[in-house]
Image (tube, rainbow, N blue to C red):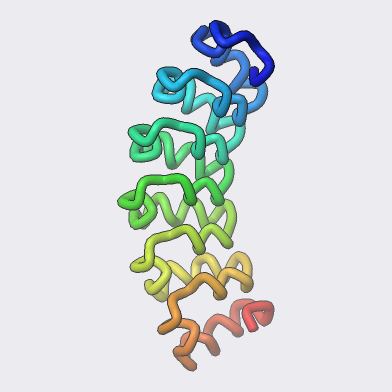
Length: 151
């Protein structure tokens, strides 16, 4: 889509077809189509990280963000701040990609149960926990029991 004529980047059908093949083609779509919910949902369903090219309003749409993080947890990076603090969205992201914990809001990175969920899947996620949790002896011992990799 990046090499297509400018008028084709404004063509809804062309863009829809493109993002169904390669979600990141959303980057080359005209601004009004990056704000088209159907097109963005198709793009993030194909490649979660396409969320980065969506209009801000859709980065703040819970359904769109959930679709993106369920495909690629790292897409949480481009979600609106309030969704980075949403426990359901955060859990969907870390279950897909535990290191997405690094993109979650500070309050989730300080939540013992939430961090344990991520660390249970990948011990390296501990690096993204709050400083308080990383220095909590009991918590770290619990984490090491789940994943020796956490050290």
